[in-house]
Length: 392
Image 1 (cartoon, rainbow, N blue to C red):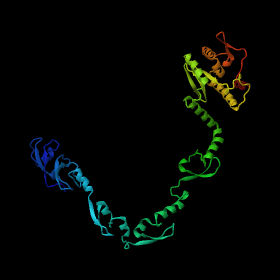
Image 2: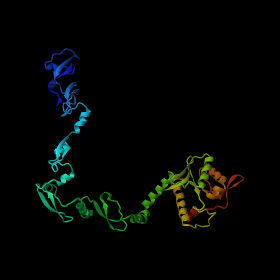
Image 3: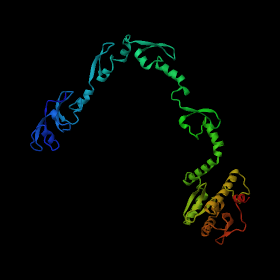
Image 4: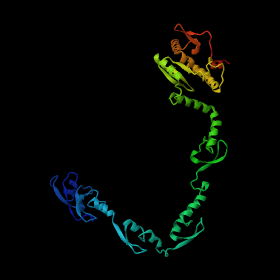
């Protein structure tokens, strides 16, 4: 079945095939004229309709020759093609004699055929040579077919016994895929096994989370390298707005004053290791908002009473020195008490600071007052604690 070999096919004269057919001895008439050619003399790339016989139902039908030559089976329709795949072969069960059906593939795969797994289990296989074995897990005697034993070997009587044996004997170093490397905990020196992919020249390893946390707190966080990275990370978080607690009530008042004066500024301006509350972009000047408690206002506190104040004073002193050395800017300090109680003073002081390009007699708002609507520097000058510390 398939393409009917003994047939003549109608072909029309064309320029690309003209020479081929003339060489076969067919007289040329005119381009486009129809003539007949035996099927076995058609060229391999002929675009013609040929008569085929369906391998499923036997129907004769015309189909295009291209794509048919290499097919072992041909069908008249998709329904016949699908039906052919469902074709099954009848057999008799070798155990109970009951009739059944299998696909061609399943039938060719086995010598003996059974209607179900129970018949397969009950089939007499005494003729097959077997080997006596002892289970390595439960020490039970069992039999295995000779062919299976020669091909795969046999150590266990069941899958359950094999799993139990592997759970005991194929763990840790004994497992064929074990790829851990012995190391010591970087904190307590306990011996631990670490996955190979985690081991590098500068990697550290810990036996548990507690050791890792203690090592970071006692060793790594005390190194200058970590302190520098931590400071830069904090500056980045402040500058991109990750910390919203920097926008205090004092800061909001200062921002409103600058907005009223139409001054272009940037909050939390990053300066490598520090940030400045307000950077006046057009004037290249800086303003710091000083809280009474955190920065220890000398009008409120006679001395430094808290460790957190002492730490902040040290930071204020180093920031002032760093900004002056790197940017050449003398910072203007607006203190919380003046911001809330006398915002007009702060406004005039900012105007005075900008008007003199940052060069004024004193840079702290509590050393100024307003006399007859004019900014006036007091006679009794007070210095903040962070400047006194620098002097000492």
